[in-house]
Image 1 (tube, rainbow, N blue to C red):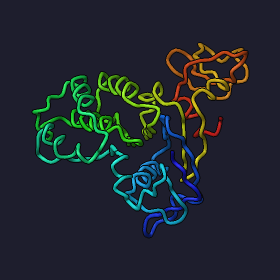
Image 2: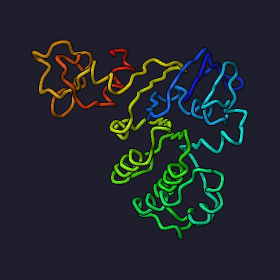
Image 3: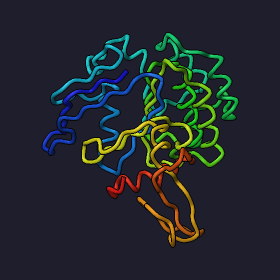
Length: 270
């Protein structure tokens, strides 16, 4: 569980990025953390992973303060950053060197995911493409079985089939005891896997809602014309007409268009 209370943070010689920021997220969630460039998403992930220290306030995750970097905490949290580098070694050598750091690491799970991603254990990590190295890092992260997994732009560099594989593997790999945080601009890549949306802007939460609650309140549709359509909360023109968000009525539910929802939130329409 994440418990953040009255968090403040700023980089040296810069204005505060977070000021009196609070957030609570329970375990068993896959959370989509969304926001424009500069909103503070990556910084928040670094704070959760214990890579940065708050200026003020508190962060408590499963009973630990991240920046104290307690070994038991570090053994149960794994972050997949947007930018990363590997030593010039094989996949199997990397696994042998780093998997012992995670007590719940599951080699069979890793082997299954590597097979799904079509990665060979004998491959040299630095001779793989960026997308292949990203897939290995995702596979390793999921195989740690850490209570908290943090992904920063996990689908950047992945081709369309790999993105589909990522969604399938993520949903099948995580358990109710885990908490997954995914920060991304590629919102279409995660709209079928997350169960909670958190949107931040200028270091503040401007929207947070569970997916189920969103489907009870909002209806997403595609219409050829806006003529005769009532109570449109937000719309965008597209080649087939207009994508719209309207209030959900009479128990009707729809699939969520996460990109449309995000744009509506940013434009203060929801």
